[in-house]
Structures are given as C-alpha cells and as structure tokens.
Image 1 (cartoon, rainbow, N blue to C red):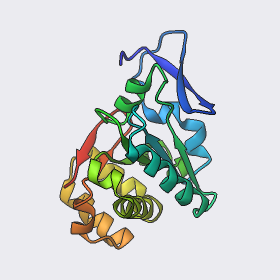
Image 2: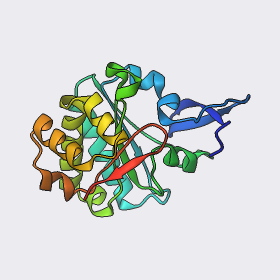
Image 3: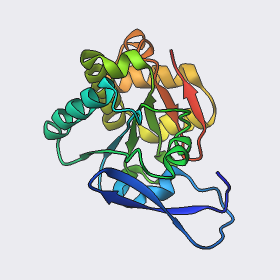
Image 4: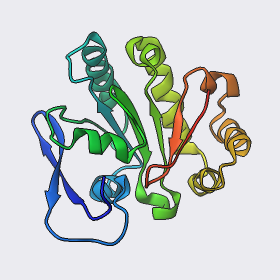
Length: 197
C-alpha cells in the first residue's frame, strides 16, 4: 500500500470496511492509525478476516467469536472484517497477513502507542478446529492482558524471539510448546512480524 494512503474505519452490518480519505501524508499508515478509536476503548481488540468463500471455517469462527465475545468482559472487543471491502487486501497487509482467513488480536492503547502489538493466527488447522481456536484465543488474550506490553513490543522491535517467548511464558503462564504449536505471528504497527512455531 502506498505510504500516502489514509483511511477511516467504518462499521457496517457486514463487518468492518476501510474508507479512503483524500489528501497526502508523509508517514507510513499502520493498523494503529486505522483502529485508534477502537484501540482506545478496549484492552484487547479482536478481528477475524473471513476467507471470502463462506467456507466452514468462516461459520465456525463466527460462532466461536460470538461465544468468546459474549463470555469476555467489556475490556475485550470482537469484530469481523467485511470481505467485500474493496480494501480487504490492504487491511490484511496492515497486519503482515498475506491471505485470509486470519484471526488477529491487538493490545489496546492503555500502555501508549509504543506498547501496541498484535498476535495473528493463519494456520488452517488452528482456525478450523474449534478446540484449537479456543486455545489460540485464550492464550493470545491472556498474553495481551497479562504480559508487559512495552517489554513485548521492545523485543519485537529488537527481533529478540527467545526473550519474547520467555516473557510470554512468565507473564501469562503459557508453556512455550503450547504457544508454538499454534503458529502465532507477533506484529507491530507498520507490518513487521515475527512468526513463532
């Protein structure tokens, strides 16, 4: 996506959509820019990007996220992206995701812009099997809620994979192998990601 593109987020009955703004900018546009209002209102923000084909995984994810959202506190917000959005691919790219389906969880702005990061899952087996999806959601949610956000974001910026894994294990009580078998990607605004597993 060219650096001079800016967008607003619009919620529709079909899901989230990106609406382009007119004008030129000089800085890189990132998911933190697009979702600033949503991230300021939540500690954890969850978005599902469907496959565009109404595959069984899409129905299963919709059902799973509805249950997850209804059983989570108001500090967690859950949404899905409208696959008919003409900027769907650009929205995926903001998170360093190449293709749908994808599940992305982000920290809110509670710790400030420098502590923002996301965890994404694109592995078909994780997204299509409800028990694995629940495990991925629960682990990532606990990491985002309980771990030191600034510390994790710093390790991501420094590309310190082992330190990241130690911090996640210490902060959220996650066993390294539990997390690695789910193949998460940790990312920063601007598209940089570190794949684990």
